[in-house]
Each structure stands twice: as C-alpha cells, then as structure tokens.
Length: 271
Image (cartoon, rainbow, N blue to C red):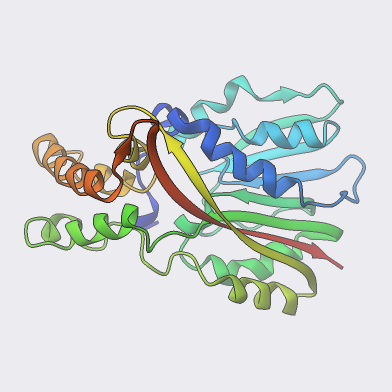
C-alpha cells in the first residue's frame, strides 16, 4: 500500500470521538434490509478497533461476523469484542488489506464504515465484492465526502507549501479518494443491484481545546503524522501550523466548536 493509505493508527486517539464516528454506521445499518442467510454471514471491511462492528452483532445477534482491517494497532483493540454473541452467533476479527482483498466465501452482507476512502481503486473492486454477496444480500458502505472542506483543504495546502512539500508530497489523501454519489449509484446499478444513495451533513459539536485538530489526529492527519514520525520537531511544527489554520477556519463558540462533516451512504441490495 502507498503512504497515502498506510498510516500508523492510534486507536486511543481514534476513539476519543467514538460517538460521532459510530453514529453514521448506525444510520447506515438502519437502511439495510433483512439478510437472506440463516445464520447470516457478514464481513465488516475496515473494522478499526471493533467498537462499531459490535453494532452488527446487536442488529443480527445470530450472525457470523468477521471484521477485517490492515492495522495491527486497531486489531489489537478488537480482542475485547471477539467471541460468541448472545444470539448464538460469533464475532471474529482478521487481518486483511482492502487494496487486494478477495472474498473467500459468500456473504449475506458486506459492509464498510469510513474505510474505502483509504483504498485507491476501490471503485474497481466493487464488482468482485458484489459477486461475493448472496442473492438477496446487501453491500453497504459510508465514507466521508468532505475532502473539499477546510479540515482537508488546509492540510493539503500546508503540505504542499515550500517548507513541507519535500517531506509530505503525495502523502495525504487525494482529492479524488471518494467519488461522486452518482458514480457509485451507476456502477452498482449496472451490477444488478437496487441502490439507495444519500448524503448527510452532521453539525458535529466538539468540545475541548483545539477539538478539530484532535479529531483530525485520529483520521485525516495520520499520514502526515506517520511520515514525520522520525522527526518529532518537524512533526510538532507541522501540527502547530495546521492548528493555527484550523482555529481560524473553525472558531470556538461558548457552547463548543462546530465541525460540519458530510458523509456519503450507499446501500446496494443484490437481486
């Protein structure tokens, strides 16, 4: 995987905003119809620390669920969730790189929460993943669709500046890491799926000192932090410059700091 898609992850930092990160997954699952298998077989692509994969076991307590991720740090946090579920199913986790993951079996549901934006070429992988979905099953995912927001654009502009270009050129997520909603709809409809696509912008109210920077440290900023990890002085300098830009873009109010965050949802039911 390239530097843009293989950052070193910090589960503790990621989970600092767990409630905001988990809500879109719950709203995605609410639109997934009944699964055809009994027990259902489910794959969660890019499961992270496993805290949202648990929602699958709550929705389908008898299902056999496997969460896949390529981060050893994230998978290390899934241990507390693995094992038998209250409904007679099972929740397991395994290492997999989504850039070349090929399903080894048929699933009633393949789902992904905020992971495909890190997978170059994921649009071309959709056909193979849909092929692995059982008839009547579902392929569903949600991804951030705010790469044009100050949160990301300021980071890219700073990384491309004279001071940082030599260290960070090509490191951050590309502006085309997520495709237009209509493109996903068209691709999946042509694969024979009944497709539901929508977008939601969350007005996330964050608390604490420099909360937007804190949010970014868990996700979008990870590639830069990884690239500069061997030079703590440079890493801290970059973070401070980025922090100052975010303070101006996302001013703090007496009640907190608002981070508008747009997400794209896709639910494709296989006929």
